[in-house]
Length: 487
Ligand code: HEM
Image (cartoon, rainbow, N blue to C red):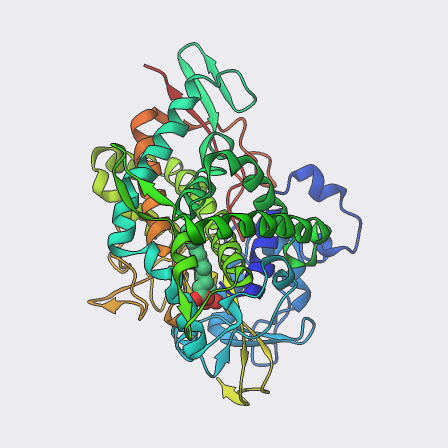
C-alpha cells in the first residue's frame, strides 16, 4: 500500500476509537466534535443543512469526528450521490468515492501517482511504494512472485502448522487474562489468543527469520506500526526500524553465502526463503543493497500484519453476529473463501489510498489542479450500490461479488465485481492471495476447534446505547470475545 495510506489508515486503525461508550460521549466538553456532530443511529446521517437546490451539505469537520469514525457509511452515500468528487477545503484534499471512478484512477498509474511520501517513509525506509511504471514493476516482481502461485502453494502446509500450534497452545494457557475455562465453557479473546500474532508469525516464517528472533520481531513490528502517521510513537518507530535494519544486515550477510530454506511437515525442503531470494536478486546487473532488502522487508512486514489481523477479527465479529450464515460455513468448509471476500467488502481493514494527480484534471465538473492530494475511498467503493446491492448488509451468499482469486486487472463479469479492499491495477496488494489463505486456513481451524461458538456479549464493547455491539465503522475489531463448549 502507498506510504500515506499506511500513515493514514494504519495509524487510524491503531488509534481508532470507534467504540465510544455512552459515558465517554456524554463527558465530552461542549462544542467539541462530538457535540458538533452528535452520534447518530447507525445508518442515519446528521443533517448538515441543504443548498438552495436541496442538495445535502457536508461540513468537512465531520471527517475528524467520532461520529464519522463510528458511522461513516451514510456520509459516503451522500458523497457518492451528490459529490462524487468532494473538495475538502479544510484538509486541503479531494475524495473520490464511486467504485467506477476509483477503479479508473488506480489503473492510471501515471496520471494518479503514488509519489507523496508520508512520515511512514522514515519508518519503513525507501520502498517501492512511491515508485511508478517500470521502476515499480521491477522491484515489486522481486518478492511479489514468492507470495503467489506455486511458491505460495508450497508454503500452505507451514501456514497451517503455525495455526495449529497456536490453537493447540490454548490448552496450556488456561486462566490467563484472555483464555478462561468455566463449567465446560471456554472463553477466549480472539485477538490475543490468535489473530494478533498469527499473521506476523507467517510473515516471519515466509521471510526466513529464525524462530528465536520472533519476540524481537514482534516488538519491532508493533513499534514501527505505532510510529506511522507522525504520531507520538514516531521516534520509537524509527528506533525499531534501526534495530530491524541492524538485525537484517547480519542476516543478509549470512544469507549471501548460506541460503535459508523453508521446510514442510516431514522436513522436506520447500524452497529458499524470501530474504535469500532477495539476496540473490539483481537489478541492472547489481545485487540489491542491504538497504533495499531491508526496506522491502519492512514493507512486507508493514503490509502483512495489521491488515490480515483485521481481516480475521472482522470475519469472526461479523460471522458470529450472523448465526445462520455461520451455521452454513461450519457445514461447508468451501464457504470460507466467500466469507473472506464478503468481510473485506463489508468491512475492509484498509479504507483507502492516497494519490497525487500528475496533471490538471476536471472530474465530475470539479477542477483538480496538478499535485493535489486525492483520497480514493475504498470503504465507499465497497458500499457503492451502483455495484453491490444492499451494500450495508453482510451476506456471504450475495450474487454480485466475485469470490475467486483476485486479478490485478480487477474483475467484473456476469454481474459480479471484485471488492476494492486490495486495490486494483499496478499496486494491487501482492499479499492478497497469501492473506486470503491465512485467514481462510486460520478460520477453518478455529471453527473446528470451537464447538458452538458465540459472542460473549457481556465482554464485548458496546455502542452508545450501552446495549448494542459497537459497530466497526472505520476500524477493525480490536477485541472479539468468544464462548465455546469444550466437549
Ligand atoms: C487483508 C489483508 C490485506 C489488505 C486489506 C491489504 C491491502 C492493500 C492495499 C489496498 C494495497 C494497495 C495500495 C495502493 O494501491 O497504493 C496493498 C499493497 C501492498 N500490500 Fe497489502 N493488504 C493485505 C495483506 C497484505 C499481506 C499479507 C502482505 C504481505 C505479505 C501485503 C503486502 C503489501 C505490499 C508490499 C503492498 C505494496 C504493493 C505495491 O505498491 O506494489 N499486504 N495492500
